[in-house]
Amino acid sequence: MISWFAIAASLLAAAYIYQRMKRQQADDLSTPDEGQAILDFGRAFPDEAIRAIHPTADGNAFFVRLHDGKAGIVLGQGRHYLCHLIVPGKVRITHAASGRGLGLSFSDTAIFDGTYEFATGETAAEVSLWILGSFSA
Figure (cartoon, helix red, strand yellow):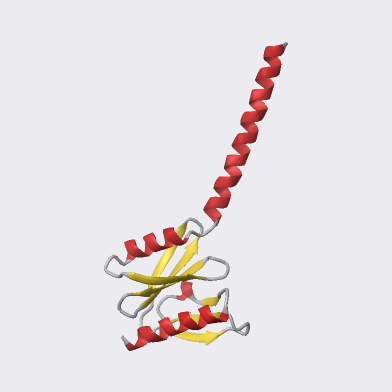
């Protein structure tokens, strides 16, 4: 009688632990990771050194400032990241109505088009200066 109780308790504990690990793994995979974004950008553009990085408010995109004045974008797509080097003359920038965002329209890659909201207006202004600074390089 006691052995059946021990087996049932062990099975319930194993099921609980399995469900908890599965839920935590799903949370980890859905949360964009700044470190992984840096690694993926480095793999995509090995000759570019990242000087600074700013995430969007939702964390699904990261804007990078490069060592030579260029800028790039890393867009989270689940567990994968799409990396793009912003080319002068290939992007149009508008400011979002909220004052904390940038609207970007790329003529060479439409997948990166969209409005990107940042935590503060200062961060949005800094990123826009990075992008505009990449035009003078």
